[in-house]
Length: 271
Image 1 (spheres, rainbow, N blue to C red):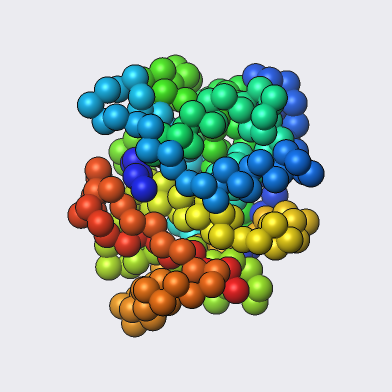
Image 2: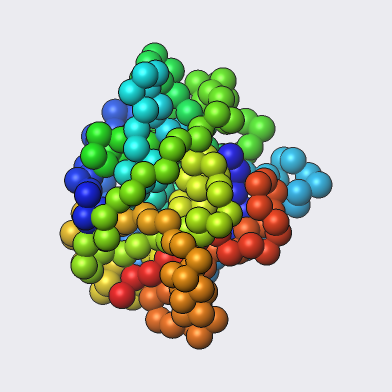
């Protein structure tokens, strides 16, 4: 799907990334991280023209959905959120890095994301495409270097976009001090749509962090929880957004798929 603008988060780890660039994943630091943070805070530059496909760019996301052993929905979405976050602070997206130009061009557009599913050999082949894989409680997702939507690597382009729904699970309350990305249960988004939305939500959350907070969050391993909000909690969260409460940000969907334009899909809270 595409997007437009037990208690605790579970155990997660970023999988060493033997990608086409032959380097392991590593967070930016110093001036490189300064750039990553400033660029996230600046938001979309609005350079995309939907009538001109050559300007449309997306970040591919692949969900590992092995046959007969489906992952749980919540830890899979947490893996997505962390994988997207790690791409956005990888030192290879900073100026002079090998991922900088495609990443910066994507931020200049609408920061679209497209979630696909893979298993078996196709999942293994996806690891040859530059990106970052994260595993949370045995559930894996990989976020890739963004690029033109019509020039996606064939190893990803052959993967199916639909059919990414999973049964809802009932996780415990998030651990204290861990940022949470809440999504509106009333929208009944597919897991593919939700993946795209939590990916954008974590970007807004990082953009709203102070530089000191970002450093400490990275030092903690970039923990992030994803939870579904029922009507009462969603009402409270929406009110916090309306008050511009510090540490709270919301994704307003462009309405390309599944939900009406202008819908609040996810609300990120970092208190």
